Amino acid sequence: MDSTKADADFHQTTQPQMSDNGQRRFHCSKLKTMHVESKKRDRQASRTRRSLNEALIALIREKRWEAITVQHVIDRANVGRSTFYAHYRDKEDLLRSAFEEFLGAIGTNIRWENLETGRVVPVLELFTHLQEEFHQFYRALARSRKTDLFFKVGPGQMAKGIEQSLTVWLVDKPQPSVPIPVLSNYLASGILSMLKWWLDQSMPYPPKRMDEIFHELVMPGLRLVLGSAK
Image (spheres, helix red, strand yellow):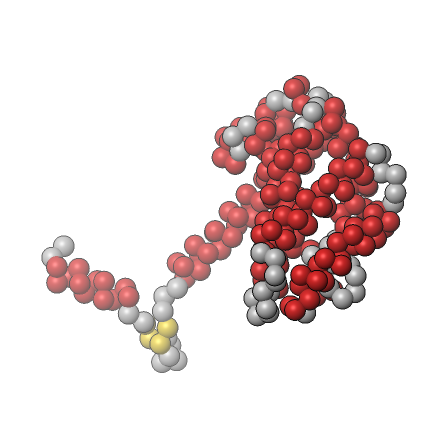
């Protein structure tokens, strides 16, 4: 193809075209198709990860960690081996990812605007969920000696979510006297420390009481540090 024709072809494909009613429009059907296909792939990948997470959690309740294989997971999730390895290196990577996804979501549910009401962090919701769904899983993790991984991954991942939500809330407000990363790590460590004690002690107090205790401990400090950002 000579340069004159190539230039003409490029000019034609990049110029807006005339619609039937005389208005100018761009050919964007290909871009729309690519966008739709990308969203479909994202949804499919999300469903696959969720299926694998659920399969692993179910297996941990049934077997010791050492007895669980990748084949067990993919059979339970009904996915192919190549699909598993497209997302995770091994079962340890899958478990870590499940922890990170669960703990990272805590930050998105913090309500900084409730600073004056005395309840900001969703401790009640978190502890209730764990009481109903997670305690058996936690005990299974303890049997498999995997609780250390949970609390090793936990503070950093939870702090990341808290930091993101706090940064968004403070975007048009005065900055706190304590650096946001320090405050985020302080809150994450406090939540998980209380959670570990609660689970290790077989949940001696109901979630509502644990929520009250947590906020009694942290709210004075939060109000002091974030008071100018109200």
